[in-house]
Image (tube, rainbow, N blue to C red; front, side, top):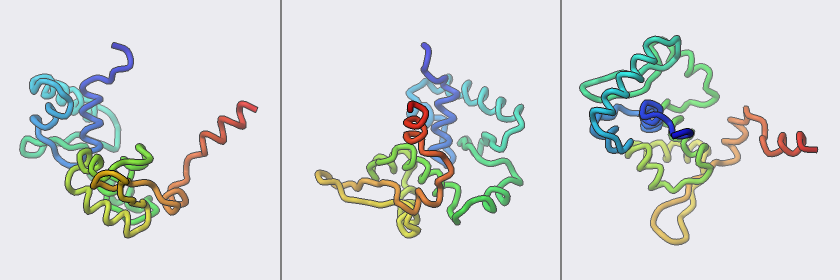
Length: 166
């Protein structure tokens, strides 16, 4: 079916967003796929990363899989970051940025319970804003002005599209 990502691509996205080691059973549940299919797709994904010259690798630790930077690149990346945030916190911030507005409960479902600590850190450093839902118990999380100032590396696509159309 065109447009539907492969199981390997979906597993890669799950591993990236979760940012922690995940069991085959959990990957199977999250991808809504059979365990044997997940195991095969993980083999394809792991082999693909091992054969490419890439900064990332798929690692298996005690029956759990994670997507991580290859050894030796952590210092380089830390020195390039404009802020002092852990990789896991940056992934949580990236998830919020991709969604633009997300319920805290949905973010925790996507990123795991560690997201609560990430949210506290992001609030303390003023990268996100949190507002209580008008109905319900969760909070809406959005990007702050400081986020946009700090991470404004991409052109404003809406402005670019308007000027190209003119």
